[in-house]
Image (cartoon, rainbow, N blue to C red; front, top):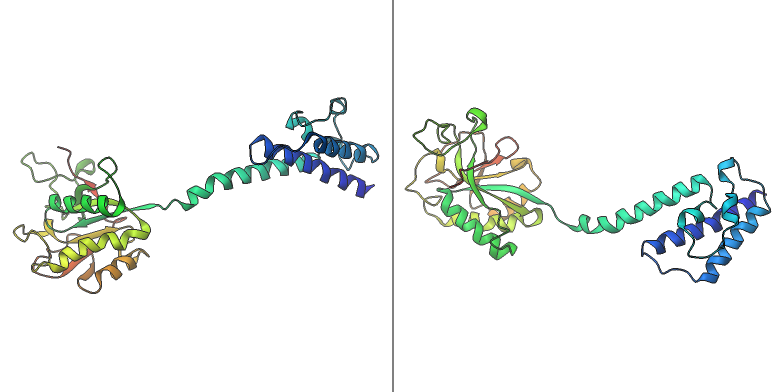
Length: 278
């Protein structure tokens, strides 16, 4: 008795699963004679054996009166199987859908926000945009480089950080921030992207560009989530090749002009503040 019941459940499961796959376009519909054979097998086994356990596992009487065929609704065909089996089949179908749609998402690499500073942010933004286009293949509508401020320990009222002004708005320089450019980079390409920045700083005899701009507002800086403790920082170290002195930024740090220093900030602690839009 138990063997006949289990065989009926297996045949029913095969019928329901075949129809679910074909209904969603994941498999070709089975031939009509094969579907009728599966349905007949399920009914014959169940007709010769009592219910497996609970009443909800019985075949609905209305289903027996319907002609067998592939055109029958999946919901009716699934009534052949016990409730627990129908639930399992639905769960498996969901897993297939998620796996099929999620495989592409799993392959899509996430971007990381990183900021770079080295003198005036206008020339840094120009160089970063060029690298986005040449190295990452972005165009004018997809570049992400934005100028702003970072590395300070204070912010103004309502979280404001502003450029030098005469309106008494919170001045970025007086709060210890430096001029930076924030950009989104694929994680695996961070080192190669940062190499252009590091090359420019390493070849400058003043340690950074724009030596005429003096003060902490123009110090060299790199910021990424986790800072020097981030696994991504190893890519920056490799790209640097020991040429510059990468130091842990503590906030309000001194200018780097005339040295080979670059302050490395944890952007979770020292976030990027976007500059004003003109």
